[in-house]
Image (cartoon, rainbow, N blue to C red; front, side):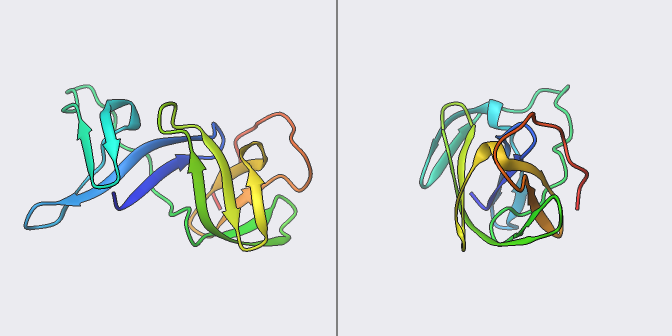
Length: 127
């Protein structure tokens, strides 16, 4: 795996990005198309002809963390997710662990989180 595409608004991993073959071509199977995943391999069903284009990818790891008010809250170091459901459980940052229910949006510039506590999930604009 090269990277995971996450949807912070739903709190899930949506796609897996890999490079394979001599030309290191990128493939982007949807998480729902995976039959098995391990540290060194993925087994995915071939995409159907009706498969949608993968969403834009923004790297979660290394992203700056900002509250919806623009306050910096460190940098993303890692993320924990349930491999069966693809639900993000927590995001580890340079300032500690964030529960997934604080995530609002992810863009090119930063991961946006709720400043305090959990509230209803509403998608945030891309940063």
